[in-house]
Length: 116
Ligand SMILES: [Zn+2]
Ligand SMILES: [Zn+2]
Image (cartoon, rainbow, N blue to C red):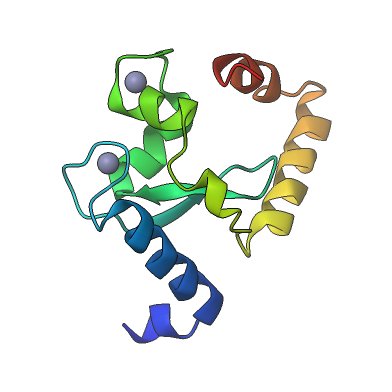
């Protein structure tokens, strides 16, 4: 409890996400949601995820028909326009990885899946 309360911005975001989509994971709807998931490219929160969905959401191979694909195609919290406090740090990590690899391993696939 103390660890979560120390980060006011994140706990405020979690409350908004629960108001929006309920306390269960917004992807699988089976387990309690614990992670404020956000898009690393826009920095905006997409929804509340359980631990397992948070670990696997970005490697879901399906375009549709599975709860994680449905969630990614239409992120339930996107219209709240909540900026995740870790967004800037994550972008730095992404850029470091892109520089190291020489290619961007994620963006083209994601852009296509999300039908931008
Ligand atoms: Zn889940
Ligand atoms: Zn899937």
